[in-house]
Image (tube, rainbow, N blue to C red; front, top):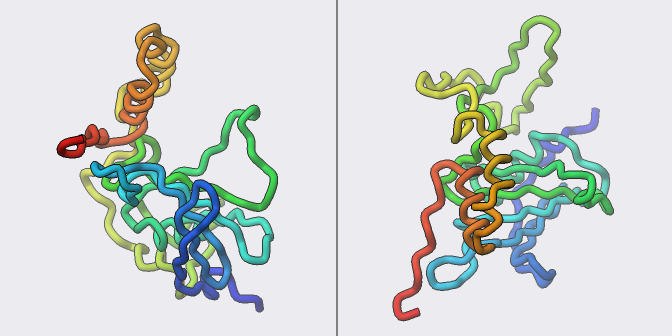
Length: 205
C-alpha cells in the first residue's frame, strides 16, 4: 500500500529565492514553497511578522487538494499559531495556469475574522458523516480529544451583520474619498482581529 504524503513527510530546507516577489524557497521531499514577504517593519525592512504569501506546488507537479497538507505546510513555514486563507476569487480574477496553490498568511497575533473560533479534532463521527483516520505522523493527531475552550464562540464575526456592513461601507462615499493607503488600512481592520496597530515611523525618518 502506498504511503500517504503525511507518512512520507520530511522537514523543509530553506534557501533564498531570486524570483520576483519572493524572498525564500523551501523544499522537502514532497513539496516546494515560495515565500513572499509583503510587509515592512518600522525600519523599512521586510518582515515575517506581517502578511506572507505562500506559493505551493508538489514536486511531482501533480494536483494537490488536501486541506491537511496545506495546514501542515502553513505550520512548518509560517508557524502553528499563524492564520492563513486560500482565496476563491471572482471569475474575472481567476488565476489557473499551473498546479500551483496560494495561501495568504495574516500578520502575527491576528485572527482572521471568519470561521470557527472553538476548534475540535476527532476521529469519531455520528450518523452518515465520514472522517478519515489520522496517520501516526500527522501533527493533528495530537489534538484529538483535547477539550474545547468553554469561552470559545461558534463563529468569529468582528462586527454584527458583518457582510452587510462591509458591503455598505465599500460602496459609501466615505470609503471612495479615502486616500488609497487609508482604504487599505481600514479594510485590514474589517478582516483581522485584533486590529493591526499603525506602523511606527522610524526615528529621524
